[in-house]
Image 1 (cartoon, rainbow, N blue to C red):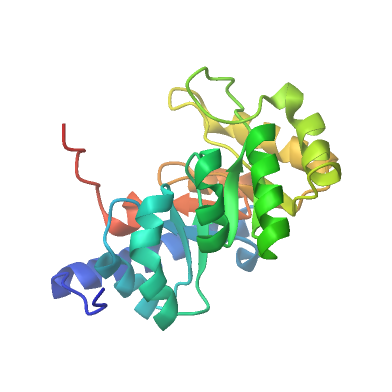
Image 2 (cartoon, rainbow, N blue to C red; image 1 turned 60 degrees about the horizontal axis):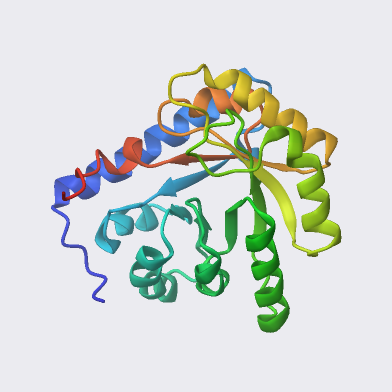
Length: 236
């Protein structure tokens, strides 16, 4: 893959400017909450955008990115990582157990550990390869039938199992609140689960609500459209 940007120059400038604006908003939200802005990591979500769209952010010094799909990350990031070896890549979309090996190879953080079968697969692959990306447990804070994530009432037992039985490097929690509900109560619930389990990282908040998430203790916010623009509608 050629890494020279084919994005028009003004689009490059827009991405860099959007990135700077989001960083400034995170910093302001952190200060308003009495927090150090350096304690909040911006995960720039590049799903559906090509490698050329990542270059303006990388050239601006940003190094933490998120992808929803293993296959897209496999196609996009190896060449970028060769050029920017200090970047960190988060998997923020659902992970099928049969894609776990590729996920361990590609990602530095897997944010969507949500069931014993997947935890077991990750554990076996980490033991075989010696590569141990950080793991976040995804919690379905809204108990939505069609959304991935462990239910809140099952979270403590699942976290303990991931640590004690599977020996996974569990360092945080992740959630995606229901779109039609106030996100604050979901962020508060996730923070409470993390606190009682001694987990330092909270991945919560996206383009529409990341400032609220920072208020409730987010250490990672996942922002895509506010940086890269609206995504194209999927092809029917």
